[in-house]
Image (cartoon, rainbow, N blue to C red; front, side, top):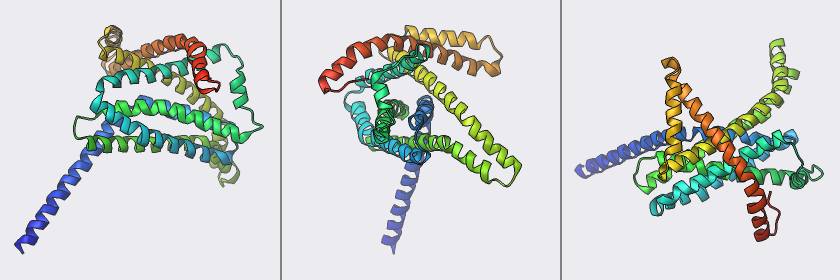
Length: 322
């Protein structure tokens, strides 16, 4: 009997440790996820454009393909890579993060440039040739997963930096929880956004009340404006997040001048408004300056990417890079 009681005590102790570990993982995952909120907003705002123009029946399958690619990026490629880098070459984390940030600046600035100076691109036009919808879908999904890889790398790296040092298994489990949770949240939201017009059409046609039909019509009419708004938010978020990663990376690498100046400007602006608005004002100024830095850097990178890096990739792969 005493042996059985001892065994039950051991089981109870193990259960308590397991419960505490689950609580620790949940707490760390929540904290790490909140640190990556800016990139998550960017991811959710950018993705809907990849299903634009397809038949309604293809929208959810395309989002599912992108979501699966995103999970593969996070769990199979980035999670092990992040843990290995953090364990054996932590000095590489910041430079790699900055390369990803520079890519976001380039992507955002390119969208601004195309908006200000509209022009055709033979490669883009070939990709958008709706005579071959299967090719268009494949190209869109590949482009979305490529962009997701950069954003996911930022999310996983930021999350890893927010996790207190501990066992590699605890870090791995926490990163996996963050990766899966963020993917479900982002692509669940994207699926809801892109199907909202279909929901509106159904409500407008089938609702038994005038209020329901009016709400459905409003959804149908409002979705194009929402999509355009999300596209703008996505571009701004790319520039903001990219610029922020660059300035913070410079600070970590021992070049704090720009980072310190931004903090000084944000603090000065916060002191000029009522205390209740100080926090928001400081964040807004910081985001605006980071975004401007991201835009300037991105504009500088456009000719570098299109005239130097692109042709080099084309020579190495035998495929046009664009």
